[in-house]
Amino acid sequence: GEDVEQSLFLSVREGDSSVINCTYTDSSSTYLYWYKQEPGAGLQLLTYIFSNMDMKQDQRLTVLLNKKDKHLSLRIADTQTGDSAIYFCAESRGTDKLIFGTGTRLQVFP
Amino acid sequence: GAVVSQHPSRVICKSGTSVKIECRSLDFQATTMFWYRQFPKQSLMLMATSNEGSKATYEQGVEKDKFLINHASLTLSTLTVTSAHPEDSSFYICSARDPLTGQGSYEQYFGPGTRLTVT
Image 1 (cartoon, rainbow over the protein chains, first blue to last red):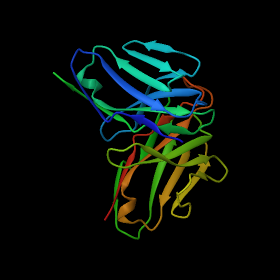
Image 2 (cartoon, one colour):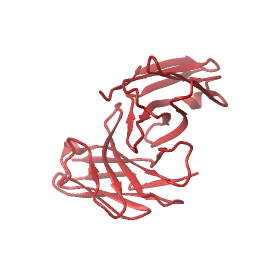
Image 3 (cartoon, helix red, strand yellow):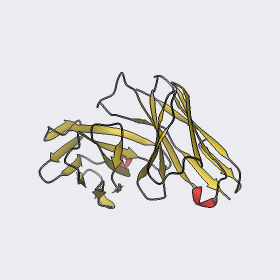
């Protein structure tokens, strides 16, 4: 199937770490992406990981990939109020087509 | 970085009329553009893949006669919603691939979206 699942909502305190999880079903995925969407706006690419990697770190962002379990996570260190948004994971399977997850709404409170 | 614009950002139209949404790549040439639809609090659903100079490829369940896509140049794709109905009200987002750059082989750059309301 094409389902890419995410938890719907995450609430964290400012300064704490946030971990957003994503599960996918197709083991042929080549690239996996994390996008951020702020209210009423398009999507901003945050980071991506190639399927033969286990981890990628980019400043405050850490992506972990467990290919065996088809599980992807995004960790945001020192979460700020400006990080409040909807986060989508997405997978590509060697083509242009992206399959998006259901989105996780991150709320950061002071 | 690569920038994609959409126009208009918001549009209200009456049932039965048609509305055109433009998607432009501002600083790169996009041979491939994509059109997505997003319902409130839901994910993005790919509607069609637009290839410059050829017919668009529509996803299953998307009516090609209702959602007309034209990709006449390397920087412009248009989506026309014909004979709009209230159920067509949605947030439409386009994206474009820059074949020359990008962090990943299939990275897409997204426009800011167009909110369509059909009354």
